[in-house]
Image (cartoon, rainbow, N blue to C red):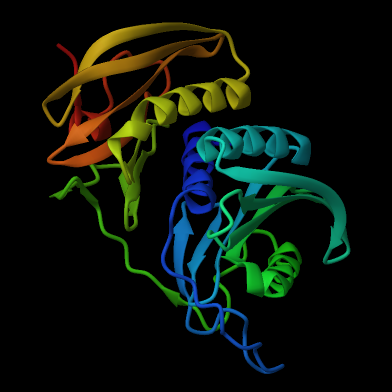
Length: 301
């Protein structure tokens, strides 16, 4: 599994469930048998792992992780969600069957009575493939709709195409308003608020725009801990001065002590041109140089 890819998904999922999203209608009616649940939705790719859907009456995510156990996905994601909720949410865990597969579901609801949004997060195994996560966020009145959404996504083929009726969102590659480019041998995948440049040598840059700067330190810490959990290789951790787009901050540096060769991973966050930005950078192979993709935004002083 690509480690930085898993990190990006962890952060993206926590944002969906634990921050204020677009206003959700409480009066959307059920779809007809011939109409997709996702008709009129906007789909955005989550790397190669899955899709994020923004709809009028719900938001949803599906992500598939080859070679990763459902138990590992469950533990990592639940820790992220509970940390990001910051005491605002109530959690209820249950076992269920989705699309004929055994699943664990975490239902989340706001403690404040005036907040009517509810979320459901499920993890299941796809035999011979790996772990799958499906999520749905809607209003209190539309909980049944989320049940149908989870059932549909749970039964999809492995890393399936976007749902029928959904419009795929065209990517934007801006970090704090500046367009980034993919160096030779690299590819760029970006959406509204986050992005990634992935290169053939294994190096990679990921970035995420956060709704407020107060969450930056927590995102950096969660990113580091998630990477450690999934990587499961020895490392040396340190804090070093760095800069994002010339703005001074601190980077958490993990030097991975892999027998196959040294790799370096950096996590940092700061405000750039009035926007809160979180980035992660992973070197490729045994190179000790900062990857070209990362050199566009990250520097050391």
